[in-house]
Image (cartoon, rainbow, N blue to C red; front, side, top):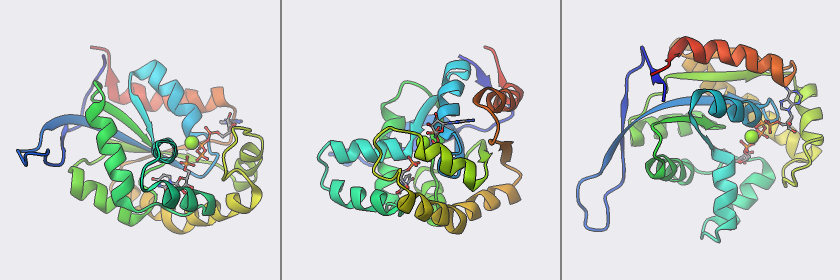
Amino acid sequence: MGTVVDAASFELASGNDANGSLPTEKKVKVVFVLGGPGSGKGTQCANIVEHFGYTHLSAGDLLRAEIKSGSENGTMIQNMITEGKIVPSEVTIKLLQRAMQESENDKFLIDGFPRNEENRAAFERVTKIVPEFVLFFDCADEEMERRLLNRNQGRVDDNIETIRKRFKVFVESSLPVIEYYGSHGKVRKIDAGRSVEEVFEAVKIIFSSVTVVA
Ligand SMILES: Nc1ncnc2c1ncn2[C@@H]1O[C@H](COP(=O)(O)OP(=O)(O)OP(=O)(O)O)[C@@H](O)[C@H]1O
Ligand SMILES: O=c1ccn([C@@H]2O[C@H](COP(=O)(O)O)[C@@H](O)[C@H]2O)c(=O)[nH]1
Ligand SMILES: [Mg+2]
C-alpha cells in the first residue's frame, strides 16, 4: 500500500464500549471529496480507489444504507434526503466513524461530507481528524443538472424539484466549508466539467504528488 508523505496522521477515537472501557484508537488519513450534486464525486472516487488504494466512504450512501437497514432514524433520513436537507451531524458522523473503525484500511475518501460548517466542526471535534486535503470538483449547474437527470439509479432526490433544492443548499451551506478549508490552504480544485477521463487525469496529478509507492 502507498504511504502518504508530508501529512500528519490523526487518531480516530471510538465511543466507549458497553463496559465503558477506554476508546480504541486507529490512525487514519482522510481526504474530503466535495463538489455540487452531480459534479462526479462518486465516479472519480471509484477511480481513486482503484489507483491509489483508498477506501471510499460516501456519506450519502451510508445514509441510504441506514434507511434500508430499518434503523430508527430511517424515516427522518429519508425525509431529509427527499427534501435535499442536511441530516444532523451526529447521525452522519457515527456512520462515518463506524465505517472507518470497521475497515482494515487506514486511508479514506470521505465523499459528500462535511456539508455545512456544523458538520465540519462537529467532525473535527468528535474524531480529532483533520483532512489531509479537500478535493473540490467544480462544475456548472447546467452540466450537473443534466448529469443528475440522466443518472437513472432510482434515487428519490434525482428529480428537478429536489435537484434545485440541493443546488441551493450546496451554495448556501457547503461552499462556505470549501472556503474555510481554502483559507487553510487545503483545497485542491478541479474543473469537473470535462470528460470522466480528463477529470481523472487532473485527479491523478494531485494524488501522485502526495503518495509514494511503498
Ligand atoms: N465527467 C463526467 N462527464 C459526464 N458524466 C459524468 C461525469 N462524471 C460523472 N458523470 C455521470 O454523472 C452522474 C453523476 O455522477 P456522480 O454520481 O459521480 O456524481 P456525484 O457528485 O457523486 O453526485 P451526488 O452528489 O448526487 O451523489 C452519473 O450518472 C455519472 O455517470
Ligand atoms: O453528509 C451528508 C451527506 C448526504 N446527506 C443527504 O444525502 C443526500 C444525498 O447525498 P449525496 O452526497 O448526493 O449522495 C443529500 O442531499 C443530503 O440530503 C446529508 O444530509 N449529509
Ligand atoms: Mg455521489
